[in-house]
Length: 289
Image (tube, rainbow, N blue to C red):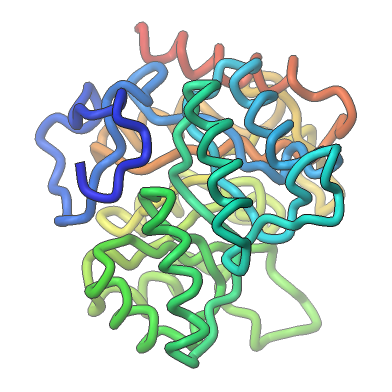
């Protein structure tokens, strides 16, 4: 398998992939799926801890995949060593070793700034290549030309992430799925949306409608349930909040979504493994229906 670092994960396909139209970039193996979809953690969920601990906690919660973010400390023993696209070969190797030990696959990296400067942007893609990632997550729409060139060269997907609408900053447009569609629809098919459903709710949008708008362009998902609709809402286990998680999962299944779903659980920071496990269990149960 191209760019693979985990030889025991070799098969592509699965329930939600059947009949899906895939680009040439390496798909996520079927062995990484839970309930028919590759679901795991965004390491930001465990940003109070190190990268190696985040891998452990993801595995403990039942996740089979992980999405890294830049700048997390490597380990409790080496808190001054940071993991990102400037990391040393030794640091990357330590992360790879822990992934293999715990049976977790790295599938995504972000949210990371991708510069217009090709040499600097290439560092991000080189890390993705080393880790065998499915995709990179960014908000760097100004670097779209550089991104498209490197997507074609490295055969790695890129998804544009959305934070909430900024009332005092009309220039911030990626909160709007229609804007994301407008910038990716005529680009390489490996470029699309890294959709955050919680931030759509905070922006006053209906996530299922947003997923439909971006059909055919969804690279990855930060799937969230929230305790309320306000901008101050916080994450809760799937099925216990105001988000219609079953409807979102049904829509993704209808679209034959083949990307990764990340649980980015930004609450109960010191003791959230059980909450994350409940989210994964919800998806497992949904897939069994």
